[in-house]
Length: 369
Image (cartoon, helix red, strand yellow):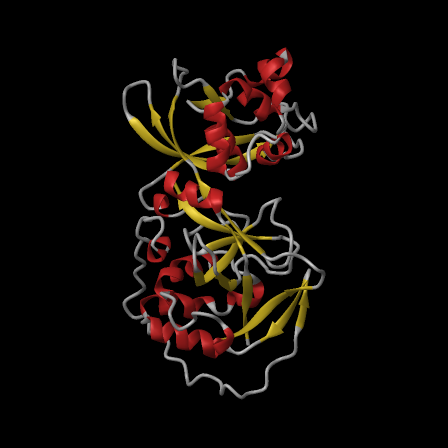
């Protein structure tokens, strides 16, 4: 988890208790290091080049037990090629890291992911915002978060962000579709960009409830980066999310202008958030909940199937990562074979890291032998 990197303290992962009679797999000795490697494979936008386990930086040092819950989650909807391993993965949930590592070496072959076309390798981060909200607007909390309008499917694309703020017809269509209200329009924008988030909602009766807003659709307008717009304007040099918020605090009279440069708006559905579910992130494109520090989003056409275990290496000034992760999500901005978005977690501290993370990246797919 990220706490192990000296970064964001995250909630402990929920314990998984296997059946009492479930034996712990004890694999035979690993293949000889001098054994013949399998041939390379072409997958999507990438060439998978087989390598030795010794080529994976930091493989002997990762706390594999921290990743095992993410693997068990992937086994809820595994790719066909990995499904046969899932009973063993579940049994190994109570094994030692040494046993887990030996099993991986025995059962999986690492392949270095190499792009077929010239492309930059890049690791960025994403997170789940956590915002304070109310059900009815107040003097300080007036920015609405909406359910999809009833006519969303019949008008494509739907109205732009500016039209939603200024025209009578979309305003009427959104009336009564408000889920809750937050204070900062940039926080609302961040939640829309991330695609989901958590709300601490002050209910009308005085109770505080914790809920998740999950992606329920968009107006299908093109996404435009407000950071890129500010750079083009010469308004700032630091286009990270903290830099954008600092500019907004110094230029409140131009915030609306900045927001309108991004016509895309996300709509949400509200979901209850149990104590167990609160230990995981939202469901990614694989259809399973994301695990902080162990889930990544990849290019859906890049050649790495959802649910695949991946070794990730990314040295950088913000995070120094050598760890087992799982391809469990995607995103429109994630394009390329060696390109990943790293799920940091939730809340302000996670958002601070996600907003600044931009580092070199190397990936190795771990595929059944």
